[in-house]
Image (tube, rainbow, N blue to C red; front, side, top):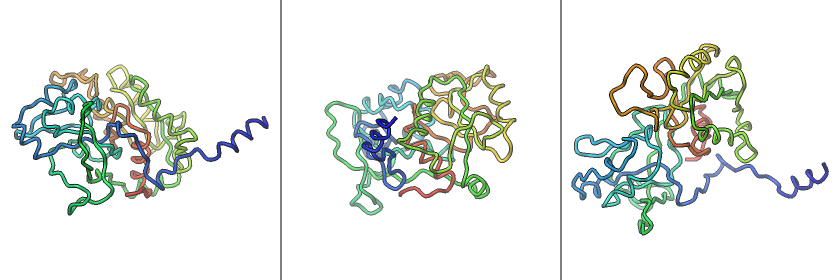
Length: 291
C-alpha cells in the first residue's frame, strides 16, 4: 500500500488543465473541416469529395459542397480526393452545437490569423495526403451552443448523465468513459454518470438507435424526472452514422435519435474526442471555457 502512495506522489497531478488552457492535439488529429471557397471554385465543381465520401455526408447546394458533420465519420477520404485541396480537416476540436444546422460546413473565404477577422493563434490542417505542404493557419468561428438559462441554473452544480448505448460499436462509449478517469476528471465540474434514469438529468445517447432499441430508450427517457434533456454523442446518435440507410426514410430506417427524443445538444465525431465532449458539456451548462 505504501508503494502505491509513493508512486502517486511521484507522478503528481495527472489531470489535464482543461478548461484553464487549451489542449495540444497532434497535427494528424482530424477535427472540424474547412472548405476554402476560392480553391473550391478553382476546381470547377468537380464533385470529387462527394464521390469519395463513403457515407454520403457531402452534398451539393447551389453548385457548392456542404459537409454535414452530423453524418461525417472523419475518415478523411474527401480531403484526399480533393484535387485543389480545398477541403481540409483542421485540429479544431470544438465541434458540438445545439443547432443541428450549424453542423453543416459550407465553403468560406480563408482568413489567416494576421488578416482582419482572423484572430487567435490559428489551427493547423491536413488534407490527409503524405505530400501535404499546406502551411496555412486556420481560424474558425465558434459553433453556437445556446445554454438554456433555466437548465443551466438547475444543473450548474450537479449534472447527472445516464448513458444509453443504442446498438453502438463501443467507441463513443469508451471515450465517454475516459471523461471519468483521472486525466479528465469531469467530476470536478459536478458532471457524473449514474446507473439509474431516475437519478439522471440527461441521457448521453450513443449508437444509431435501431427499432429494437427504441422502446428501451423511450422507457429510459420516460423514467427521468423533469427537467431532462437528450445529448446525441457521435455520428450514429445524430444521424444514424454508418448504419443510416441511403434510401428514403422507411418506418424502420435508422436515423439516430427518434423524434420522441429530440436532442438538445449534438456532439459529432466517430467517436468525439473527450475534449470535444467535455467542452460541449461545460458550454451547455454555461460554465466558462477558454476562447
